[in-house]
Image 1 (tube, one colour):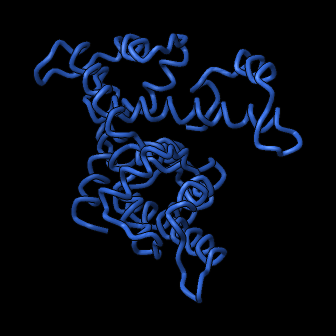
Image 2: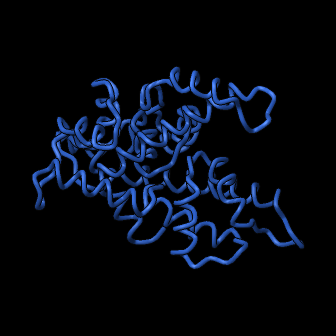
Length: 262
């Protein structure tokens, strides 16, 4: 774990521990991982949390939180190595760039081809990636919040427009306006779910970093809903569905952000 990563986790712990007690509830760990861009089920989080909450109090301090995140990364690495073993070529543990989206999906991410291409270029990666190269790729992918460069610029433009410019933060009351900027007319309850996931210090204000996370969470959930709906319609696994069924399926999509752990 690098010094920068430790600092990020320290700041995240302080955000979650907004009352300054020095400990956080294990029930907040799913949301904390979501903040880091890691999508885990509550059951998996609970299993690892039990390994660090040795006294069973339901609360952990910052040292235990760091251990928890390290264990999460270790599990993710183990799963990555398992996925790589399924793609061994010439006895070398590696995957092709074309297999990145499948590996990311298997790890719980919702990748977009454009983002993958940009991060691959930014990391100057070769045609095949070993585990170390993939870890480097994943670090930058997370830093980008899974957003394409054009999407980042659009989020920044919306943030500047609605926060009044300068170094001011965005009021959580204005989250609906930001979402409508992108064409999403979301219910107030959905907005509150998203705000609760990023405004971890309960300040009522969001900085640009938090707004990017909020948009990423919304888009990921929308893409998950779309994929689940497509898979349900594509019962024979053909990889496509008739336009008439696609239109009907889109009308029945669940509201993004309306049903997710955290």
